[in-house]
Length: 307
Ligand SMILES: Cc1cc2nc3c(=O)[nH]c(=O)nc-3n(C[C@H](O)[C@H](O)[C@H](O)COP(=O)(O)OP(=O)(O)OC[C@H]3O[C@@H](n4cnc5c(N)ncnc54)[C@H](O)[C@@H]3O)c2cc1C
View (cartoon, rainbow, N blue to C red):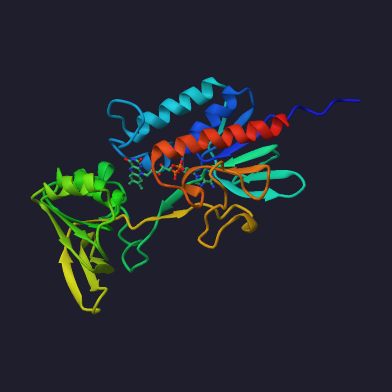
């Protein structure tokens, strides 16, 4: 009788952001056969385009790509197999199954879901039409196109403020359009206050992005009285929060908001499935936590396989 082949994917890690990379590296170093799925073709997730990651538990200045590539190389050295295809579906029946977008199916013994979150869209007319023609979600990548021009950053959280700081070094004027008070950390806000070419439009949201071939401006709506106004700008950078990437997960594991329901150790209601980082409900939101959650989830997955 032929013996069944050893399962080449004991632990599957979904997502090549910092949580997933840390999880994959750790599980492989603990001796497990690990397959990492990354769907975007770029490692580092939300910090993939950040030129200086703040709050890393290491001295020095590193970009998101520096950190991600370092983790990826170490993960691969430890034997992690990488599949650069998005996961289309996870089934949590008697046997776990992962189907990727190219139709291949894998049967891991445990899954660490670290698929994080994606920047939320404004959902207004002009957003899709002008994508890449004035609408951008990366100041580091695209800021240079708006050198000495006026741009608008939409949002008031950490991501909006840190991206505005990048743009303020390049652009003539950066207008921050905020629906309410800033939610960003004090240290970022102080840096923004020190820039003379940054101004704020409070209590407003974007109603429409306007232009002909490229963005020419915004139609704004006051959230308190509904009055509309125009703002001329060549670039628009929306950073109005993130939405979890969980559409491929069984609905029973998701919260109403779409995050995965899991405790701080990453345990979900299915003992074979663990969640780490920004995909998890209750996640605190920084890279150090993302990596540490990745390590904890990997340990829990390895522990399950050993039991
Ligand atoms: C603009 C910006 C700047 C930030 N700057 C900082 C900072 O300086 N310091 C800091 O501490 N925090 C920062 N943050 C927050 C930080 O990026 C996140 O908290 C952290 O990166 C979350 O990591 P994660 O691995 O959990 O998720 P993510 O970074 O969201 O990574 C998820 C990964 O999963 C992949 N994925 C998604 N769906 C699938 C699928 N179906 N199949 C396969 N792969 C999939 C994605 O492509 C992505 O690579 C910033 C966030 C933003 C948006």
